[in-house]
Image (cartoon, helix red, strand yellow):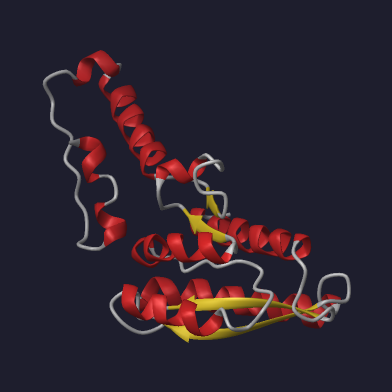
Length: 194
């Protein structure tokens, strides 16, 4: 199983687990709002993830008749990986009651949604990104970080380099370069290294 397929499986499993624990808008359906990005600069990543998510929801509905007889429903709102569009999608989609969880798969959109989801008391899933302090549920009770956060990513990178160099003490005086792309996700670890 590749890392990306593991991330998808964990995200889908978490969303389904949250959906079973929350009351549905209608007893016969569970709604999933999808803030997707199938067009724009990050379409290559979003197309596979959101297409796979929809395929999985369809599979559960067709093969199993839903989850315990509850059909999984969704609608998709295109964000193009832009924060403003993501927030617009949230505001539009939240009118559909009973959302299982929100998972924009975008650092910028997730950060922009934190105050809103906290006020609305709905779960936000952040997969492999997001605020490190959200790991403590007392700080952000509606944000659920899965897998890694910027600090655990950075720790893993530094520990790997240290192991290759012969120990953490061998890093003294050396520079670690962070090569990133110009999105919020790409820049998340920069303050940690500084």
